[in-house]
Structure formats: structure tokens, C-alpha cells
Length: 149
Image (tube, rainbow, N blue to C red; front, side):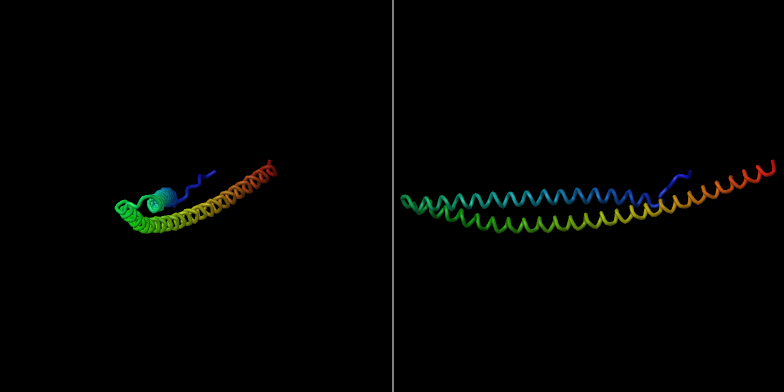
């Protein structure tokens, strides 16, 4: 039986490599998003700590310098949180872009696999047709020689 050789195998191999790269890019983007979200949560926790300290400072002996420092820390945390929220949104956008790229590459790879399967099916049909023809010729030859002999 003849061996099936897919003439666009090199393109399919490239599609596999591109898919692997896209999966890696997606996982890197997902890790970056997780890191940015963790930073945001840490900032929020720090802000809550400063707010808790502000309540404690307001209840005890009033130390205006300490209250002012704490208030400045809270305002700094608010600004840092705003900036971190922006960083999270950028990371989310990057993840979405990586997801779309991965989806596109996977679709292209699947398309080429379907083309390969169809080419193999055609190859199989052709081989079966040739084998059937060879069997018919052999039967005809054997039948003709049986009558002569």
C-alpha cells in the first residue's frame, strides 16, 4: 500500500508551533493578571489598615501629626489603588487579546487538520479503488487461465 504524505504538513507543523506559542502567551497574560489583582488586593488591605488606625487615633488622645500622616497614607493608598485598577484593566485587556489570538490560531490549526483528514480520505479512496481494480484484474486473469487450462 502506498504511503500517505500530506503535502501541507509543514504548514500544519507551523500551526502547531503557533498554537503552542499562543498558549504560552495566554498563560503569561493570565499570570500577569493574577499578579496585578494580588497587588490590588494588597493595596486595599493596606488602606483598610490605615483606616482602622485612623479610627483608633480619633478615639484616643488626639495626636494631630500622627492623624495627618495617617490621612496622607490613606490618600496615597487611594491613588495607588486607582493606578493599580488601571494596571488590572490593562492586564485584563492583554489577557483578552491573548485569548482571541489563541482562539484564532486554534481555529487555523483545526482547519488544517480537517484538510489533512479530507486529503487522507481521498488518498484512501484512491488506494481502495486501485486495490479493487487489481483484485478484479487478478480474478479475471485467474478465471481466464482456469478456462484455458
